Length: 196
Image (cartoon, rainbow, N blue to C red; front, side, top):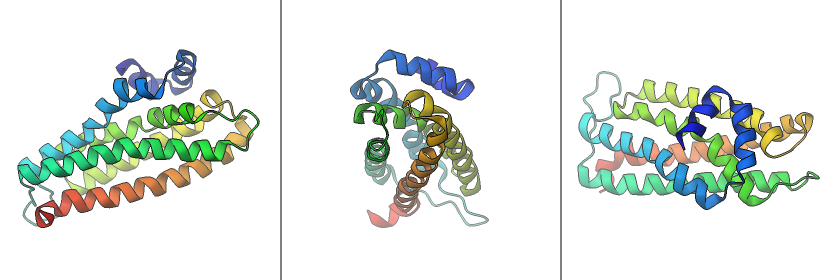
């Protein structure tokens, strides 16, 4: 699992070729990669919000109780896993117009590997400073975009010239899914103590 994570960060073109040759399945992707990677931001957010609390400026930290954080963590984890499938479905629907239309399974696998930097950016939630979380999220999003642009021709077999338009459209829709997920997440982790 972690050899793909390092490969995607260090040399994504070669790594996508290697992943493509492995004939991976969605169940393998989830059990070997996503169940662990999606736990990174969940566990870090759980620790950060219960031990340190959200820190905004000079205001006192807003902590979430362990009981509330456990419920939020479970919901957050499920949402992250579902978001990969949703983005994979979006990629599949958009790719149907191309001659070599990839399967839904292949699109979900691609979405899972492309989301790797976003999952890893969740490490900073251990100490939840708003500006630090935003910075890490922006860096993770930029690297996800890079993986998207570099991986579509290699992994989904879409021509590079058409792949740019396809990647841009996919990135725009993926950002919408991410924004919805972030909005719900911020509400849950930031105001969780008020909900339960």
